[in-house]
Length: 135
Image (tube, rainbow, N blue to C red; front, side):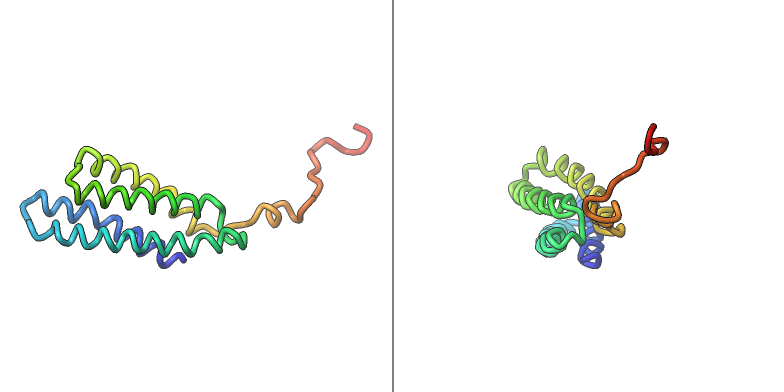
């Protein structure tokens, strides 16, 4: 899953570079931008499909699944906006999606400790400092 997340991030980061090349006069870069958009969405779909069972097995936080799903929806809207030449939506949505990617990557890349493991066990008693018997 981490490999797919890194490939998705790299492909995602390539998008503004390709857009910049097009805006700089390389007309062929727009075709690469469109092709890469399909790759971005496909990788996000794979990432979302992989995140669901990982979350359900408590291998990832729920936020990893919900963020990847949100990015998948946003990427679909982004592709539509790009092909429809709705630049008033396409450009700001790309910026918002970059924030989503920045949120997603640490969720996927960091080691995850489920709440039950982090607390020691389910139903563990937490003792507060100075809360000894009789105080």
